[in-house]
Image 1 (cartoon, rainbow, N blue to C red):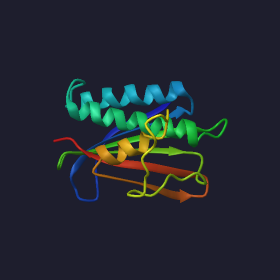
Image 2: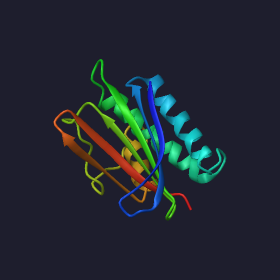
Image 3: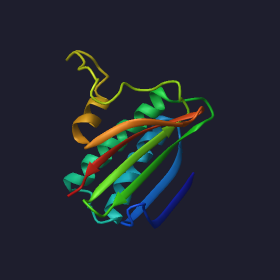
Image 4: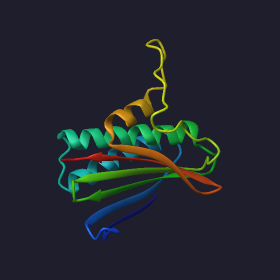
Amino acid sequence: MNADIAPTTDERTVPTHHFTIRLSATPKGARLARHLAAERLHAWGWPYDCEANRTATLLVAELATNAVVYGRVPGRDFRLRITLHREGPTVRIEVTDARADSRPPAPGTLRSTSPESESGRGLLLVEALSTHWGTTCQDPYTKTVWCEVALG
């Protein structure tokens, strides 16, 4: 398990905090991502019991679970990156997995699932609770699903 926690400055020269960790693409890794996100946000000033922490943690859980279920390649981890922008304040959540070929539908094109369905609501939650979300592929081996959430 590799973790990197460092305050930096983004392109707008607004102080931010970054947290990055690689986790196993397993249900245990997805649970750990959720717990670590809650802890990191708490350390950055958003307590565990506040709505902002709960919302961001839920989004981490959804994206990490999708990485495990749909983006898993045996032997490859997924990466969680959380960036806090004090201006706003806003948090950006990025989950990178090993399946560049398995992209989710584009924002705004998601369809509701039937009430009887046991799955298929994760990205609907991401779309409903985040201010922006999307997918990027910067190389042929990975994809990143990201979202941004206003904390204030």
